[in-house]
Length: 162
Image (cartoon, rainbow, N blue to C red; front, side, top):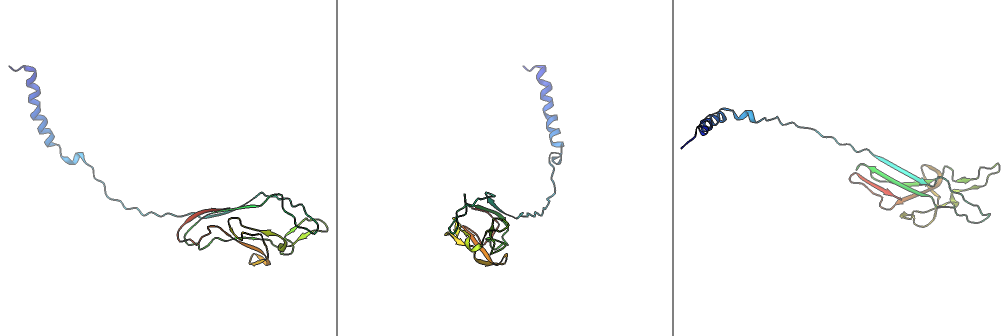
């Protein structure tokens, strides 16, 4: 025995089925065009050289060898493009004859040949005088330093050297 309540919902089933078929499929979908994008990435280059501490006291010894109160730590870091072929660190003085001075009226001058430097993580590993010629230190008074892991780049790289 069927009840009157079940008759109305059963009549709606065919109507809902026809409505489902009548709604076009395009209403449910939206297609977009394909866009092409040209990407250009640029690498900002940087090269930083830091020297710490900014002041070193050297208690001088008449006729002897004096050592500074602390070593000078030079740290380099870089981000370079692959077109760069080398990173070279050069320590130099603007005057080979007056590398260090006390600035007195009658100054005590120390020539670059009496100042020694070394790279603990590259070359030179032993203390070496600043006596090499270089375009920035005429006629001499330079010490080219080759940091450990210095590179001949084939691709962009970053690197710190102490």
